[in-house]
Image 1: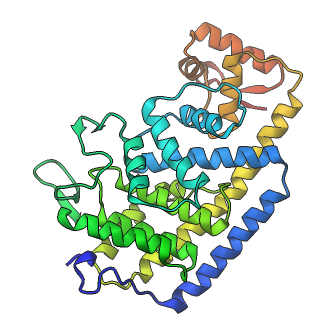
Image 2: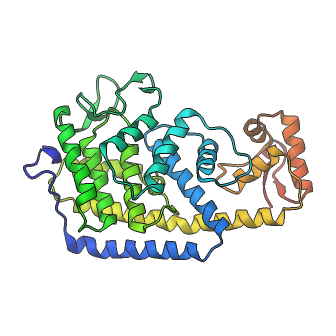
Length: 360
């Protein structure tokens, strides 16, 4: 029996004693994050928020197996928020749609959540009316069976089956009324419950996970009373993806006591906020780097690589990787890198085929 088949669904219960201490710690940590950001300059706040939102969009899609171009996401967010960045590029239509949904959720967090607003989000996620090769119903509730499965075709393992399609309109009406009318619940706790409740209904043909995380971000923004986002819940969920699916499955196959889910959700949120310190440190280091190099001339290729090295560059930088990223020849890549070494910005490590470059 799934949780939505329980007699008193959706009357969730939880152990208040088990939840209260960790909820208090999370609320204290939220206050520290916001207080810390207020002591920093506007530019650091802006860059930290851009970083957090970029991670939110890319990691939320990555959880579903869809890899978005981080540079396109960053450029799209910056353009929509009026943030000036170097090397901005044009974003693909699918990227623009995900960004549009996430920014609507976080920047307009105080706007009521309605069915029409969710339909707008869903249409933005699937602008062509297709999910991969498959045509899906967009901007409307699903009208078919919805199962969460894994494994090869014909030998799938069914992890969860959502309520039948005929129940979806009524289920969503109750959910949306609860979102806007339930005022007695702490908003952080409400975000955790809403996430579980929405993915259990699974009201759309596709995109349910991403929309659930957008709803979560909206409620967390309400909890912060701020549209400024300095931590990414989606990035932390991606980092703990296997545990995320395990706790969802066990909760959806359990009783209406969702204490275990809420404990995991709050712990995950705490770890997401812990990453803010690292993000701020990187942002400050990046800002200081460009301040120190304000008189140094770089071409667009070099600037692009330096931005990546100052952020989350994966692996070692070598000539072939530089050429691939900047879409240039290996000869040009080598000249660019040697020029950066001469300018005392990069240093060479290793030799021969193992030659690599890193920030000095």
